[in-house]
Length: 447
Image 1 (cartoon, rainbow, N blue to C red):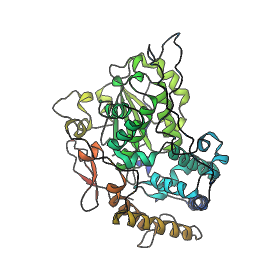
Image 2 (spheres, helix red, strand yellow):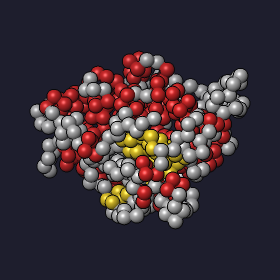
Image 3 (cartoon, one colour):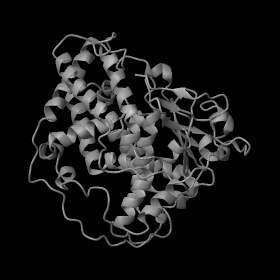
Image 4 (cartoon, one colour):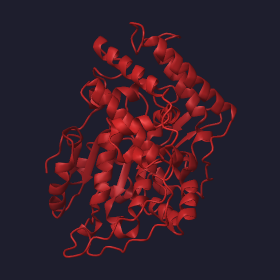
């Protein structure tokens, strides 16, 4: 299992990214924007409503781990949070039949929720690059992401925060919310960084995961929650993240094929061009059997970003040792900020968007961005034009307004309380990974 090549910062600064667009690529970007803005004006189907939810029955637990032989698969457990606010047809029907059912206003709000604090042009360009500049394919991929985010309630997850998600899940089923929090604090996942190209990192301790410890829905919610919070550290020109799977003490009982398939689908279909490198550290020989099952699932582009590291020397070529958690570096005296910082329970967020001045300013800049984009799409002007009236200046104002509204729009997280990424009293987004030699970094204006 030889290391594969991964995307470096220098490779990110190439044609097809902001600041490096050709005239034909700019024209394609304008066409995608035109199609999106037209879509956001559609009425949708007024008869499209969520199906009434029945009380779910708990499926029996599996035994025998990933390769349980002769065991009958339990019936699927009905999802209690995901999909409960949308018409089931939105996901079950083919894309071309489902999208006209969805009100354009919902698609638009979901779109801006997907953008978060990023440069809107940069997000749209990821879909164009992912589909090799095929406009129709890129557009379909993007709107498929929007319906997926609606069904999976991504905006609700962000708004509620970890305590709010816990409370909502407890209302649906006793113990489900506690299971979500237990998974979040179990040591399965830590955030930190940077890697040697400046990316944020998610470290996953595979040995702590057992499929039967929680429902598949809890695993999905945890994955989406971590991914959406991790996006706060994204700033131009580095748009990608790093994942490290720590495979020490891995056994087949830790393998969760459903989680792997869900994670792969996220990066390939719903978060395109956001994975910079994925490092599989200290994989034991038994993992080769599992790897043979995983590789057919991988898109070649995603597969090219995966590398195996056999020891600390190989890993530190990609991540400085000061950024590694102690369970990997084996130096208990040098814990990362996520490891060493203890905080209380974050405040719960709310599903209803507050009408604060910061949120109103954010809503106003969206309207301005939409208007200016409509006008820009009719011209020959570049997407990355500079100057006070250019697209970059507009994107910068958008990012600043979204960051200032972040404390109102996003439920608190443990990482925010730890000071790893937070919006200060001046409305500035500060990253502090806390590793040796790292100084808190203001990324507010990085568009």
